[in-house]
Image 1 (cartoon, rainbow, N blue to C red):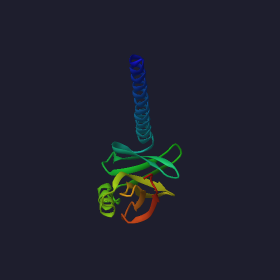
Image 2: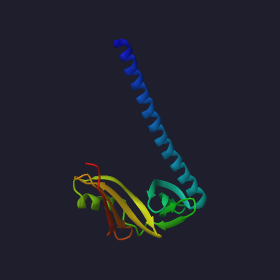
Image 3: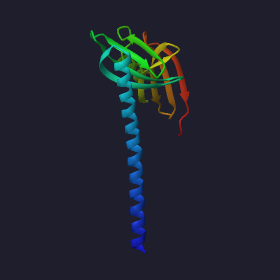
Image 4: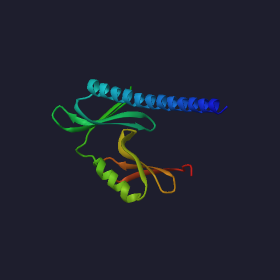
Amino acid sequence: MWLRLGIVVIGLLALAFAFLYDLTSSVVGSQRAFEEQARKWAAERTTIAQIDEIDEYRGKQAYAVVMGKNQVGTPVIVWMNEKEIYFDTLARAVPKQSVLDAVRRGYPGGKILHVVPGLEENRPFWEAAVRDQEGRYLYIQYDFYTGKVIKTYTVQGNT
């Protein structure tokens, strides 16, 4: 009886590990496919010659966001999806590090989940997602050029 129980437990553990491996593989595979698509779009639809960072923004529209340098070395950013493209230089933009610093000052003790360039109605901004000490999720939009807070959304998390 103990032998059968042991075999069942080992079988269930093996099944659980296989499921987790499959789930992890599909997530990693999806991320790789997304980055490959973003690189392809950047090569075909922009003047970006060097890619420094690829992000994903999900708002009213989802965008692949590519930051890098064009052929003459100017730092640039582009938001792209299948139908739309929005291009800008980073010369006037508030640096990502400044946004990270502002989030840390504004939400001490909070866990920064991401800071990504967002785009709504052709208006670029930085979106910061933070989980605060009370378990709430905060989405803060910072103006891309001034760093001022535009909007803040709070979503109650499971506590």
